[in-house]
Length: 531
Image (cartoon, rainbow, N blue to C red; front, side, top):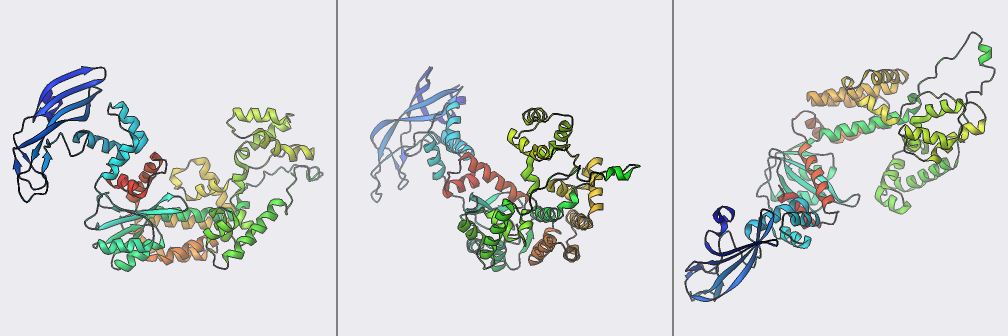
């Protein structure tokens, strides 16, 4: 039975086995007459002394296992050897200075690579092999570093964040096997250039549209084919479509139903009856928006980087980028309105109907829409009804309005994947707005190029996008022209960066497991060595 449960004890004599609530304790001794010196390899049978070693082993039936092993110290009799004494090592059971068997060490290394320090330590307790989080991290750091011998033929490269918005690294993947090849400490062109020089042989490089990676590949591997990732191309197109939709927000509102009767004069008797007081055109927000737009452009027009502007003005980088790319203050605010009103917008028709029925208590209305799924505050409902209360008129039956996000989805979604109701909304939207109809045509043609691998049609598509007269599409076309060969290859070849993006998501999970505290050396081993 011992030979089945403890095969690594076959070369020693087990003298005693004790089993209690604390676990399993085995007492054993070695039986070898000679041992090889680790310094020179000479066999020696001259015993100098001995001592006992306590080794933790893999648990058995949920019980902790400890092996008390008697080992001997031998004298090395080889004259040129600098080592005078050495301790015998049992293959598969002992290692120098180790207090765990090799089998337990390998198991703990796998757990630490998969779960990092504290989660791995918690799991180890349940496996009856208790160990501290620090010990597990030390075990990972002692693992031999993975050094690629050669570059893959088809290489995927992408960046990931050590600290989002501040510090980034680079991951390199073999696109043919999906194996993680290397991790670099930053995403600069110089670092990737040095790596490519040390690892020649790359023929195809799958990447996003980052200029630093493109420059490194052109410098070291000018004959390599660069392939732009299709996911990022489609994402860039969707972002451009959203900007176009935001610029034509007025087209999102469906026209009000014709309420004319046989007596038109009666309808026009009180033209203000259905109006809702509008906010002042130049309110505090508009003033703040204009001032912020001027402050951003005062620096951006001088060539100051967006990150520097963000630090100078105390704004988020995304906010600075939005204002920097907006020609007017009003354009900077496009696309934010539907988010500003949030969830209350979806319940407006219900609130108006209940108001006209005589229920004007904001607290009660808040309770009613909360039962329908509303998650906002009572104060938001009260603010939403203030204008109606001040006007003293019935609540307007507002026409339904598409959000920018929903309209973007209607334009970019596959026509066969949307239901009949949304398909009707899409047709009505495109009929109301010729500009968005032109955008929808561009989206359809680009999707056809991407799915049918017709990269040869890219130049014609870029010309049509530029001729639409829509700034977001012109800007997208200009950027694609700057990376024309890589984009064409991305729309033609089978290769794309899907495997790289999957590994980037895996890196994010590893970072979360370590609460973002892993240094580069530890994170690199977890990325490259984990199964």
